[in-house]
Image (cartoon, rainbow, N blue to C red; front, side, top):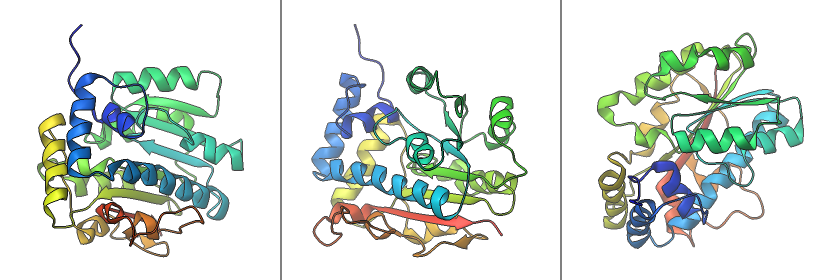
Length: 259
């Protein structure tokens, strides 16, 4: 049986050490790992900072509604697990447009009434935010946590990522929060090779500067410490050192609150 074309979610699964991937995904993931030997640490720390952000949003900011767009294949410490450990009543919506992701997530969450899975496309934000299943689960009269973790760097400049984010943010009520994790260019050949491997393998992938990532959060009140590397956003005792792990300089994260 011929391997299907490489898929972003399955490549990510491979880099995390998962088993839900095909030879085509492993080939692209291998090229990325060849250019960036520490990439496995990078994706692990993407999951770790997502956990810290969800803990902040639910425990400190008091949110009880989260929408995770581009959620990817279920793995350990998923958003609903982290949030519902703090408050089991927290409602979570996972949004993705990959059939494999949707099938896996729906099977995993069949018995979880507080969590639903929605078929939606980030680059069609107007359709996404009016989706009936999403609207039935999320009360847009109450603050919402919007999670854009590791997804905006797959939206190319010609697809207007700033306009995509603006459409989503405009739909959120006051007191909502937006989290962005985005790959950033370090200006070195290895990072350029990794970006090229992404583009060649899945047809898209665009590293941006930290200032460009920060611009996605314009108009929001930044939560301390602002837009920083993954290792610098409210690190816990287990967070690897930035100085000892240069790969962690290749992603910026930030959280903003809508006034």
